[in-house]
Each structure stands twice: as C-alpha cells, then as structure tokens.
Length: 168
Image 1: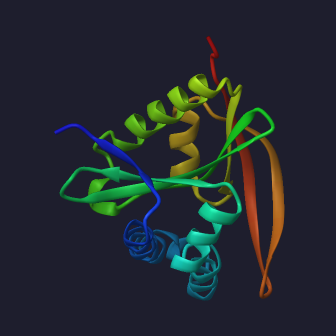
Image 2: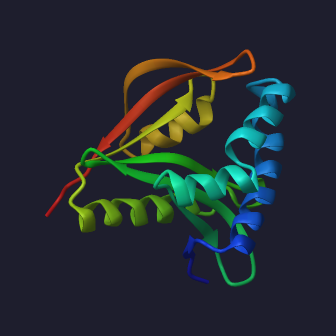
C-alpha cells in the first residue's frame, strides 16, 4: 500500500490530528520531559484551537501521513526566508520503522525543490537521541543550540538542525 500524504485544512482533519498528537506526545515524550510540560505543550501547540490558528493565522501547512484507512502520523511546515521550517514531524508508535518517515521526508524535499527553497530546518529536544539520530541519518546537521521560553515556567532545550536541498 502506498503512503498517502494529505494536506490538512478541514475542522475534522484538524480534530483527528489533535487527537493523534496528544497520544503520540504522551507516549513518546514522557521519558524526556515532565507530563506537566507535555500537557502544557499539547494544549498550547497541538490542540484543535492551536492547530487551527497555526494554519489560518500563522502560515503553517499541516499534512497527515497514512492511507485512506488510518493516520500514521503528521507534519507541519512553514516557508520562511527561502527555507522550509519543519515544525512538527511525528509518527505513531505502531507505525514507526515502516519507512513512513523516509517517504514523508522525500515529500518535503520535493516540496522544497518545487518552491525553490534551499534548506529544511527544525528544532529537536537535545535529549531526544533517537530522533536526532534519525535526522542525522536523513542528512541533517546540528547547526546550533537554542533554549526557548515557552511560558508557564517551561523551556524547550533544543538543537537546531538543517539539511541543504538540491534545487534544480
């Protein structure tokens, strides 16, 4: 079965992604950050209202990753200063290791080529060793460290990673 990457724009699609995000975040990040921070970040960045505002008010594009029968994951990007910011990139636990991340990354690289964008960049928690390893395997390099205050006494302690894209 081929992977389907779908542009998210309806209220129903946004609600589906918000539910998926909450499940992924609570499963994956509990070993990296506190449940209090996870709940705060879900509400602040991945709730229905937050995703809706990002899409309609901040220029983000969300995509679901899956098939007609299921959503395996999702990603969110924003075009900025000739580069593509990969804001969110998550695959559900039961779908990891199936090549979905590789196919989604190929989609993003094609998007960059189509839009004449020179790089994909992202932030990743400095303690998220498995994701850092995946990004490095996909050609990303750590370009700097960044600590961002996200409110409520929480910070994001991240690496900024970047990958150059061959533009035709």
